[in-house]
Image (cartoon, rainbow, N blue to C red; front, side, top):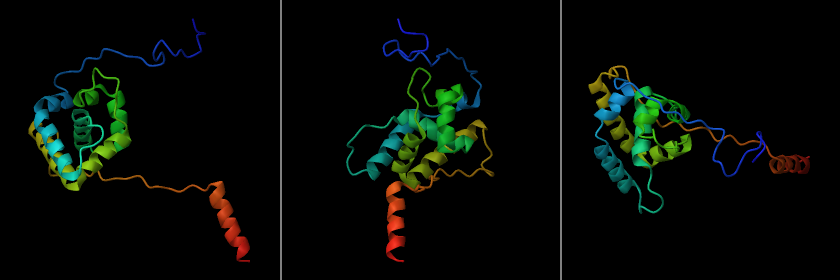
Length: 175
């Protein structure tokens, strides 16, 4: 038996909690989930991927889950990080992504990579279809909505010892 404050390698994750959560059937994300023809959207996403990728090598993406994340981002007009947080901690978002019985949750990099592999035209097509379904459900007013999922975080170089020494040597040699 381990000390109460010592983490165990064998008993699973003692620091996480699971709960059986019920969601109202009339919640907007639950209704949207039931309105979308997921096999059709998965087939569309697979066709877009096949057109963009030269060979289908590597792991097959979690189409259903990541398409749910794209739908969530389209409907709520949120960033990749916000989508990651909602999917990890908000039951209706997990339901939309078909993750209620799963311990896996996509991170923002996984969602971003999935959207990048679809390309701008593929994402535009998917967004139009998701927003059309949401409009049919009455979740949004299309006159006021604009969805853009092309945001990318800036790569900021931070000074390190090698870079600082290089700059120092350049300054010394030019004096």
